[in-house]
Image (cartoon, rainbow over all chains, first blue to last red; front, side, top):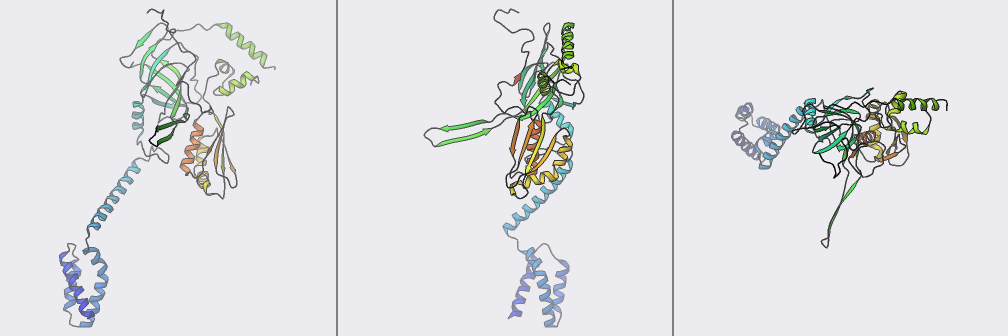
Length: 268
Length: 145
């Protein structure tokens, strides 16, 4: 009975073999040869051993369920995604924005500068031993950062939306200048003045105070509370170029007064 | 240097280690990092400190190197949640609790503390702060161009 069962299973498997596309040709060739051997128990053992060894492979080959197909396709997709991710990571190693939720990777520095151009700012080198801060000059400029415009003069502070690609104490050049003015002259851009530049320094990146957004619909059992802190960048304007600045005659009296103050303070 | 209270104010606002003449020009020259000291408090036993402990091993040395002007101190607190405390030049202190945070998040918190001035977190009155609002003269109804 057991022998008959084995034979039945063998026959089934053989038939499935023949049906399946993934033909194990050497095995197929070997099976009929084995069955032809006259020694019955030995062949039986051989067949059983072969069948046992092949059962696992046979089952994996023959049993094609609809769910298996989807699993296979998913596996293949996963493999592809892994490959793509690896490729992407290798390319994006240069400039990777850190952070737990930092998904964006800006590959070369060109892209960074392009994105900066979209926000109408260019990051210059960091500041060290540069006497960038000057006295007040009676010149103003109308600047656009993102979608906001400011009328700005030397020494002013502007709180703009967070500028991504610059850090604290970075020099910045603001390209989009819409208007320049001085006590004697006004230059109006259409819409931008091409030769004008405004130089500034990034002072801080900080969060604004918390604003609570509260929504309520009365008598409808609907109430929502949400907290929001806007990320801001504080920029200090240092220089405006593109217009003739009026030369103020520096009075000598103030300098003498300053020197007297120094002499009084030092011995004290 | 000077010791008068006026100069203390100047030092609080002023920028670099300028020469005498530059100090007397304006108070509003900034170029100096406002965060003076960062205290990283952690616990050896608590599970909420795990991220901070990993941060101290992996990322804190790099953070120290990139900010040589900053004085970083690690403090062991037993049985309490970890926090970062920033002490600023204007003697403001800002404490951020970093319990159950990953090392990357702790680094973000530390960077935010370092990037900010010590000013009080208050809603801004205006986004444009200026001392000289008008260059060509303030407009009045009597002005005729």
